[in-house]
Length: 207
Image 1 (cartoon, one colour):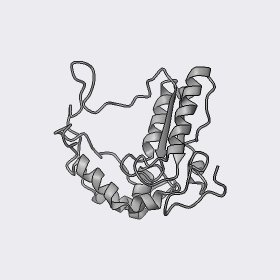
Image 2 (cartoon, one colour; image 1 turned 120 degrees about the horizontal axis):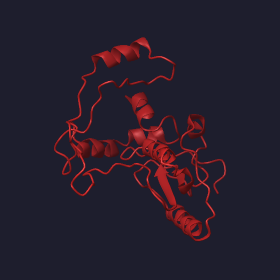
Image 3 (cartoon, helix red, strand yellow; image 1 turned 180 degrees about the vertical axis):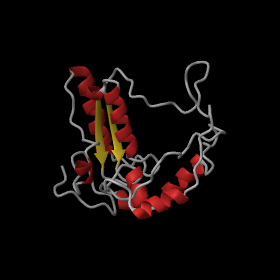
Image 4 (cartoon, one colour; image 1 turned 135 degrees about the horizontal axis):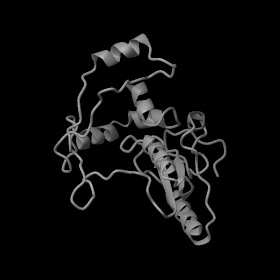
C-alpha cells in the first residue's frame, strides 16, 4: 500500500515517508471523500472509477506477476454518469482544473501532504502546458509533511516574488515538479524551504 501510495501521490520524493505515517491526514481524506466514491456535502453520486486502471508499485516496463495478480483481484467500479456535470451557469460542484488562467500564478506545496498530494502540482503543470500557460506558472516544493504547513518566511517570500513578477514582468524561480529524478533527489525542496520541521531531514545548507 505504501508503494502504491508513493506512485499515486507524486512519486518518490523527500518527506513522503513522514507524510505517509500521518494517519490523521489520511483519515481526513477517507472521511471527506467517502468510501463509496461520493464527496460529503458536495456530490451524492460516485465520481470515481477504476475500470482500465493498472495499479503499479514497481517501475519496470511491464507489470510484475505480483502486480498482475493484484490488479486481477481488485473490484472494478464505474463512475456515475453526470456525477459532476456542468450546471446551468457552466460551473461544476467540483471545479475542473484545466490550467486556464491569464495572470501570473505562484504555488507552494508541501511534499508530504496526503490531504492534497503533490501529484496535484504535477497535474496542474501538465494542464497549464496543454493550455499554453506554462510560462505563467511558477511552482515551489516545501519540505514539510502537513497540509499547507508553510512557515511565515516561505509565505512572505512567495507573496513578494509574485507581486514583483506582476509589477515588473520578471519571473521568479521555481521547482521542476515533473522530472522524476529531480523530485526524488534527497535535497529536493531545499531551495524554497525556510526552517526545518521535526522529523524532516535538514538540507545541506539552509538558505
